[in-house]
Amino acid sequence: MNKEDVAYLSIVRWPGGYTRQQMVEALVDAAGMDPFVADQRVAKGVPAVVHRLDAALAPDVLKHLHKRNVAALAPARSQMESIAPALKAKRLVEAIGSPEPMYMCEMWRDEGRGLLPRELFLIVRARLRRIERGRPEAEVDYNYNYATGYAVPEVHIIRKDKSSLSEVMDLYLRDGSRIRISGDKFNFDVLGDERGLSDNENADKLALKLAEQSPKVLVDTKFAEFICPPDFVLRWRTSTGGKEVRDDHPAFEFYSVWACLVYRRLAARER
Image 1 (cartoon, rainbow, N blue to C red):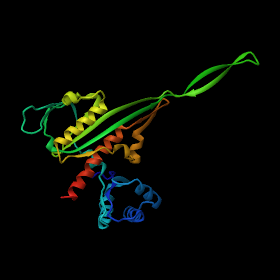
Image 2: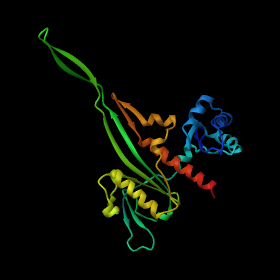
Image 3: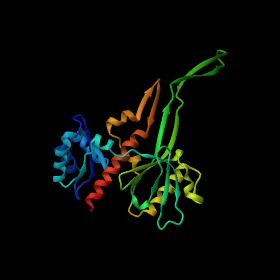
Image 4: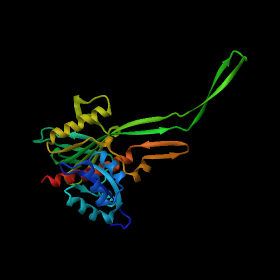
């Protein structure tokens, strides 16, 4: 473990019957959090990242929480970075006549591979936004003044913003691999006659199709509710040459891996 490594303390589930005050006390006692900050984190619900701490301190913090029967984990940044990078999918081709649902997955850069829906562990489905706020520009209107007979200039400062949406879906398999489907870079012909007109519709239909073919797969659609850890917010928003950009993509990179670790923890507890 890198001595400068950090961990993200995450609460998966509180013990049944725990009051909000007990939740706050648990965070204060275990992680030394400020009571006000702890209360704000608790209010957002679970599962959630509640605190960022030195990775070397994480085992002791978790030990205190586990004694209280709090389901928690604290994935280190190095651990999250060790999760298999996403393989970018180009299309899925269904194996006609196969005794069970099966696909050939064609990739953009990597070698193709087979995909059995029953091998899916988790599907993380999200809609990502990118908003670019333009540079401040002066726009002048001239209003005619009948009393003076002159046109009076009126200056307005405006910004011309650009925004875009993109659909994304990460498929985590039980062997540890991960396949990413990005709506604008994926061929949805596998949907056949069910193919819709938008990437949003098609991504939802494909996620549903795969989930129906894999009864045990978990499906997460909670990215929009996620509060990104502070050290990632800077990567969320950037400012260059007077332009401000808010981009969900870096936050999703964090969330997808974090969600995978959370669901693995939940699955381990239920065995």
